[in-house]
Each structure stands twice: as structure tokens, then as C-alpha cells.
Image (tube, rainbow, N blue to C red; front, side, top):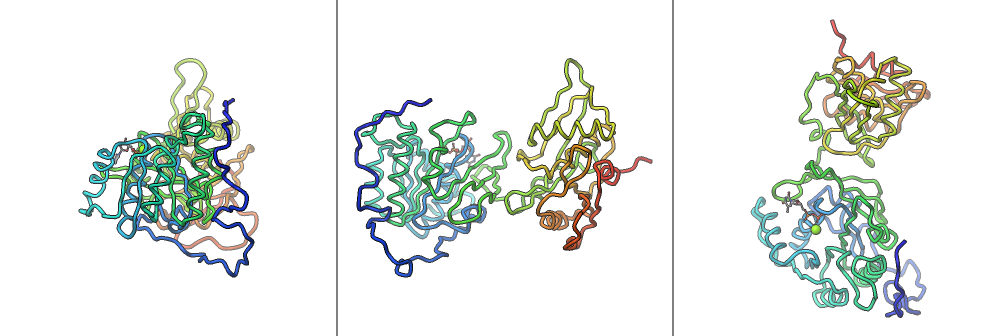
Amino acid sequence: MVEEVIAAPAKPVHAAGRGLTGASTPRRLTEIEGDADERWALSIGEFARVLGGGIVPGSIVLVGGDPGIGKSTLLLQVALEMAQTGEVLYVSGEESERQIKMRALRLLKDEKGEMPEGLLLVTETNLSAILEHIAAVKPAMVIVDSIQTTYMPELESSAGSVTQVRECASRLRELAKGSGVAIFLIGHVTKEGAIAGPRVLEHIVDTVLYLEGDRFQSYRLLRSVKNRFGATSEVGVFEMRERGMVEITNPSEAFLAERMVNAPGSAIAVTMEGTRPILVEVQGLTSPTAFGNPRRTPNGVDFNRLLLVTAVLARRLGIRLGDQDVFVNVVGGIQVEEPAADLAVAAAIASSMRDQPVKADTVLIGEVGLSGELRMVGQMPARLREAAKLGFKTAIVPKRIRKGESWPKGIEVVEARSVREALERAMVKSE
Ligand code: TYD
Ligand code: MG
């Protein structure tokens, strides 16, 4: 329960006769200006892709993520780029001017770039002052870092509360819609799920992006969960380096880079992140339980799916896991939620248990059913093409019920009815 103090209405956000963009008179669509493809291009391709192809003028975008994940860094990089062609105003309520200048210098060092004239910085948390600055500067793009530190003194609640966050965002939206300036709001989400976090903003903004990743890993995923201007569940992959976020245009290669070929307990899955297939290494380790109940420890896969897979391995394939601790890890710190990775999880565990490696040039795709059967998953052609592109020779997939389109070329597709059959085909035979 959150206490919400209802202050005397300051100025109603939607006064009668005032629409989002000024006048509220019905107009014919044919008379309204606007181009479907009006976007500002960006050389940070991964960022542009997640936005749906670039920055839309007059849009308001929320970028959420855990503290320290790299939101300020990423948006400062975007600001530095956009400022080469137009004015950009960076409003910070979190860091000092000096800190931001130092970060900007660090980000530019690598490309030997010059500090762009068009980038303006102000440290301010009072919303009316921010609105005045925007009116005075008339930038093409504004970054508000963060929405939780922005406040309206006329509201009787503290900065970061539900009321403050919602009201400030609404005002900024009005400004974006009315003036055509693109506004990016940075919002912190804590693991505990702060109530006044970005969740209350999702319906106010046009686009919601989440920056996520394991704090101890350098990879970061920028995920769009809502987008009025493009596809949702699009994902951009970055790596946090010494000099800022570097885009990873071929994530599969990056995630497989450190793989130890022919080691038992490793299998390759092909997971879909939005419309994009990504190959990931799933590792499994079984070890006799020393004390108490056997443990199941997933890292990067869903706990319940791991329980299901281990149960199927034990009951349908007779693999004795009852006295074994089972660890599963997805390399690179990404989360694989979809059941399509079940088969790779099963193979990794079975491979560790039998101390027999999975063939190094083989990918495994499929959902595991409770009877030990393999079930078809979506977007199979895209997955297979990505695996072929990375040089994998064989893909073990569920048996097709409907024969329709043929499999993509360049990879041998082995159809298996059951997990047992799939594992037989996947394992390196011991002499
Ligand atoms: P930051 O962008 O401040 O995170 P957020 O705004 O989401 O809270 O990023 C903070 C972390 O990023 C910090 O731990 C240092 C690291 N970092 C780098 O590794 N390289 C860099 O070039 C920069 C600027 C930061
Ligand atoms: Mg920050």
C-alpha cells in the first residue's frame, strides 16, 4: 500500500479545450502533417533497431534498468552522436556536471572524436525549471536522468513517489507531443520492483526499453517491451567496455567465443530474442549430493523448466539424478526463458552425467514434454539459418507433424521423436 497525498489540483493536465498537441479540434487525417518514416537515424545500430529504426521526433521513451547497469552511459553515447547534427539537452539530477563531462571525454577518447558543440548539460531536478530550459534551448532531443529525481514542488509528496513520477512524466509527454522534441526518460527499477518505478509510467510513454544483464558479466541486453513505433520484444546486444557500451552485431559468436569444444556437459541451444535467433551455450554439471536433499541450481534458465527436464531425464530415460545436485548455466549471463532450450538443457545434464560430450558441431532445439517426447517450437527456419551461418553442421529438432516448407539449406536436420532419440544422435559415441 502506498500513501498518495492528493494536493489541491495545481493545474489540471488536460484543461478543457487543450489537447495533447495544443488545439483540440477535430481535423481530417488528410490535413494532418506527418510522415510514417520520419525518424532520425543513428549509427548505434543496435539502439536504433530496438527503437524500431531510429528516434521518432515528438516521442517519449522510457529507458529502465537496475542501478549501475549502464543507462546513463548508453544515453550519453546517443546524446554525443545526436549532438553532431542538432541540439541535445542532457538534464541530470543524479550526477554533477564534472562527472558527466569526464564520462563524455572517456566515451569520445576511443574514436578520437571532438566534443560536439550541440550538447548542453544542466543539473536540475525541478520540473518547471527543466521545462523552461527546454523552451529556451529548443533542443531536438532531451534526456532526463532520472525520472525518479525529477519533482514538482507543488505536489506534496517526495521525489520518486508514484504521484511525482507520474505527474512529471505526463508533463514531459505533453511537451514532447506539442513541440516535436524527442524525450528519453531514465528510470531505475530495482530487483525488488520499486512501486514508483517505471511500471507506473508504461502507459504514459510511447516506448519502454529495459536494459538488463548480469552485473558480473559485461553483456547488456536492451529490450523493448512496448513500442508504439515498432516491433516489441526486439533486442539489442551491447558489451560494457572500458570506454562505454559497444554494440555486438553478432551476439551468437560472442556468446560461443569461450566454448570448450568436446567437453562433457555443454550443449548449444538456439533461442529467439524477439525476431532474432541467438546461439547460446548451455552448461550442465551433476555432482553427488553430499548432504540433505539434492539441489537444482539454474543460472539463466527457468527453475521450473529445469525441474521438469530433470524429472523427465530421471523417469523417461532412467538417468539417476535422485542423488545428484544439478547445476545449469547459460554462458554470457543471458536469460533463456523459452522452452525451445529444454533439449539443450537435457543434453547438457545427460552429457555431464554420462561424462560423454555432445558433438561439437551440433545444435539442439526443442521443447521437452512430460512423456519424454520432443515438441516443435516456433520460428524453426530462422533458428536453423543462424546455426548454419555460424558453421554448425547438424541440428537435432523435433519431428514434424505437418510436412510443409522444407528445411533451410546448409545444415543437416535430424528429426527426433523423443528426448532419448535426440540424445542418442547428439552424443559422441565412446569407443
Ligand atoms: P551507468 O551508466 O552510470 O549506470 P546507470 O546509469 O544505469 O546507473 O554505468 C555505471 C557502470 O558502468 C559503472 O559500474 C562503471 C561502468 N562503466 C564502464 O564499465 N565503462 C564506461 O565507459 C563507463 C562510462 C561506465
Ligand atoms: Mg545513471
